[in-house]
Amino acid sequence: MKIHGLQKMTLLDFPSKVAATVFLGGCDFKCPFCHNYEIVTGKLAPVMDDNELFSFLEKRKGLLDGVVVTGGEPCLNPGLHDLLQSIKNMGFLVKLDSNGFHPEVLQKLLSEKLLDYIAMDIKNSREKYALTCGLPSLDISVISKSIDIIMNSGVDYEFRTTVVHELHTDSDFDDIGSWILGAKAYYLQQFTPRDTVPDKHLTAPATDDLIRYKDIVRKYVPNTDLRGVDAYA
Image (tube, rainbow, N blue to C red; front, side):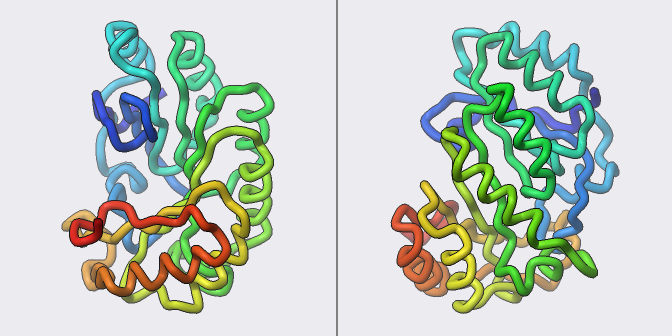
């Protein structure tokens, strides 16, 4: 398996854990605000293969608690199961980041106890989901199925939304809140414009807007908070 990126240590990506973050290439969404678009499109060359990754992790035993596997969309990779099994066999906890468009993969990984934490993106309200993913259409029931699987998995999890000024409104967050009613945790992440983002016209939301969106969702998910917002304490 080709590994398209490796962050050797992070204190942020895996809550309460010291972890390494592994990036896998490819994605079935084309989000115009994607920060990892070069990984999605394959323009960014792989940095190593899985054997090199395992060699790195072997040297980090006792230093790292876990490994975050992200992308791109990891669930697209046919070698994901074996990768996670190998990481678990080395004694590491596993966190998976996913867009939720492959509920059958999530179900299989959960049934085999290969996941210790799941972070799933909620791109937008149901009505605007395909638009926000950069697709002409999308079967929203697939996303709903993943939400249900994760919320009933017994595994620690979070839902999260990258908030973009041009794409999100109050009514969107009211719909998102009702969609994930009773979820364990939900985070709003502030979009940051970068040169690698596909749509260079997109801008970050105001902090006041983010706080208002947070308060809207808290009616449905009490543990809702902001992440990556400098002006917010």
